[in-house]
Image 1 (cartoon, helix red, strand yellow):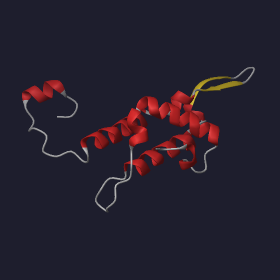
Image 2 (cartoon, rainbow, N blue to C red):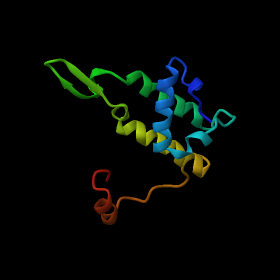
Image 3 (cartoon, helix red, strand yellow):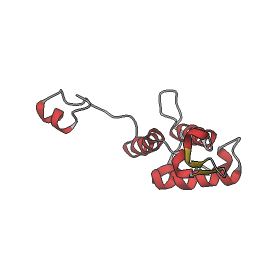
Length: 122
């Protein structure tokens, strides 16, 4: 289980808010554990690194929800701190945890059917 204490250097209230949002994105977050061994994924540590990065980027000017000049007002939205990459990364950790490791096998060779399904990747 990831606790607010795991997000070292982050205020407790902010860590709690980040964890609540993270659990809504990746419900498996509390079940992630670091496996023993050099070649095994460290899912919990990876999740903590993502969450710490979100905490550090929170409140930066490029992540504003809105801004006015006169009389000056700035509005932050905690949800906007979450980049699409952060969301996808947390979800991928859940996928790894549910499959028991890294994907096995090969992706099918490029075909017309695949290019119609995923034209940007082929």
